[in-house]
Image (tube, rainbow, N blue to C red; front, side, top):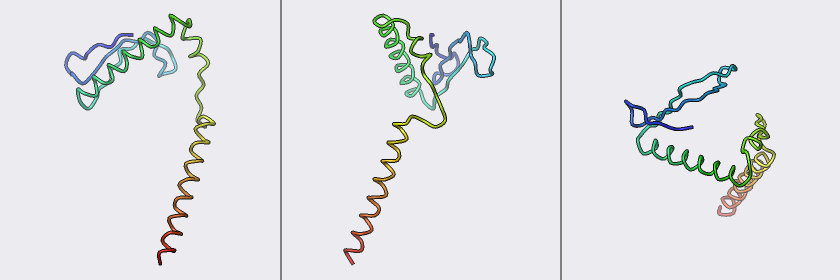
Amino acid sequence: MELRKHMSNEKAWIWNTIADFADEQPRAELLCIRFANVENAQKFYDAFEEAKQLAKTYEQTNGDLSDILTKVKLNDEGDENEQKHDSEDEKESEESETSGNETKEDQK
C-alpha cells in the first residue's frame, strides 16, 4: 500500500484499497485521511512507512505476516490484562483518596 499526498491539501494523504470491508461487501476504494496540520500529517506518514518496513522485515525473517494477523481477535470486553490493570488502577486511586482523607483528619 502506498500513501500519496492529496493534490489540493497538504494535510491529507490518499491511498487505494482493493478490498474495503466497511460496508460488509468488499470493494475497491480510494480513501483519504486529513490531519489538523502538516506536522501531524508528516508524523503519520513517517509512522506508516516505518510500520511498512517493520512488516517487510518480519516477513523476510519469519514468513507471511497474514498468518499471525488472522489469529488476532477483537472483542468488546477487552483484554484480560487490560481489565486487570484497570482494576488495579482503580484500587490504587481509592487507596490514595482514603489515605488523603486520613491525612486531612490527622491535620485537624
